[in-house]
Image (cartoon, rainbow over all chains, first blue to last red; front, side, top):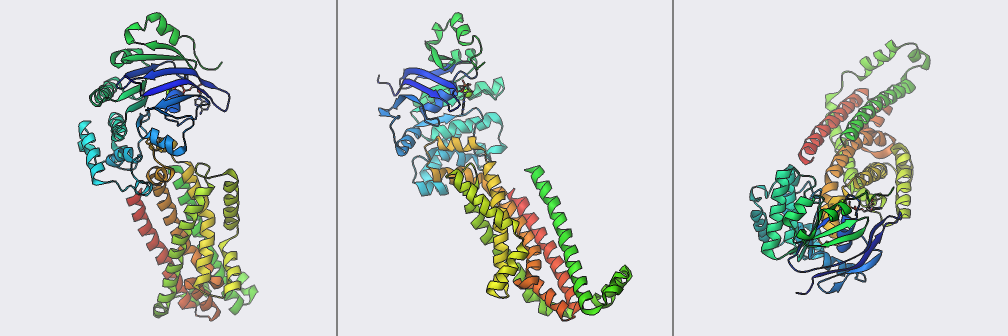
Length: 252
Length: 262
Ligand SMILES: Nc1ncnc2c1ncn2[C@@H]1O[C@H](COP(=O)(O)OP(=O)(O)O)[C@@H](O)[C@H]1O
Ligand SMILES: [Mg+2]
């Protein structure tokens, strides 16, 4: 099968000199569920943010659906972004507006700039957003304000927002790091099930190896900005784990 | 936000007291100028008390008829000043906030401009404008707008700078354009602070329009000033009572709206 995402020698050096990402290359096939593991500061977030260009890479390239992003115009970057949903550790919902509106934000890349700015979504989009909420067991919450929801519910709204983009890829940056174990499992189950059912590829940053092994079809190990492991969960040996989680990758 | 709000409320108390004292001082001073020998007044508080009891009390209820129009003028100046002032300020604040400005230099320029407007008291603006345009509500309204813009730009810019960037980022990540991010992510976070500050400004404007009115801005302030000149002290007391009622009523309604929005 043709890869939908190709990451080629991707590098990022922040303006303060931190080399957060060095020469990372891999390909992702449709429907893959990849977990990126590594210590805090290893460059996991930077990797995801370079893929959807929330962070400007300083080297290498990403190609998605055959479109190269390094030379893409601002417009083309938006077209790439709308096909990739993103889920955040802090949920990052617009706190003061309704759950439904938060989910509809997933359509912004598809509606006109003025309609989008004014929040005038079509009936069709609203129906779709509602059915996505239903699918995630949130129909009772549809008209509540996002800040009235529990953490686990907010993260499900985060998944719904990503899903509303009808994405080919979901980037999840430590989606369960702020949740208790029971809620974390609910979130991972939902994310996993939905990606399965809809054939969406997913890259999820995790820092618990056990969780990664439970869900992922593939594991990428990061250490000090470099990719030090890329393989199936069963090939992730204890030695490799201690290498990935060895000494602190933070700057001394 | 909470602490800031408490501080504002305290500042407003102080402002109210200052203005009441100022008006009282002006009233007494005018009366003194026109009626009493300076030494007798400084002779004792008793004399001052006598002046107020004998000449200002009781207030003249018949004056109300003639007060309706000046009171409406005061409301008009305050409301128009608030609406126009807050709209201009919202646009300028966008350039004055570190998070939204197109360029650092623009930020410095807009902030400097607002600071100049803010640091020249409304009274001085009114005097200068009265010199240019003559006496009337136009002068009062303009003075209030100018003074409002000075302080609101800074307040709004601070709100914009406190906005949660991660929420903007999430909307940006969906492929939204800049105007879409503004409308869907910045605006919902901006509105509560915007409304709170604008209403607060309206309360201040009612107070300020009285002072501004005294130097030619029209409305109740001008009425008071005129009444003093013509020795219609009991009409003046009526006007002052009406002004206080106006302040209290405005505060009551703005508090109600604030509770709804925040
Ligand atoms: N905006 C930034 N500016 C400078 N350094 C950054 C920035 N963001 C992250 N870093 C640094 O880059 C490295 C990788 O960070 P990050 O990608 O967030 O790692 P992870 O998500 O694995 O914890 C860290 O050393 C971090 O301090
Ligand atoms: Mg991270």
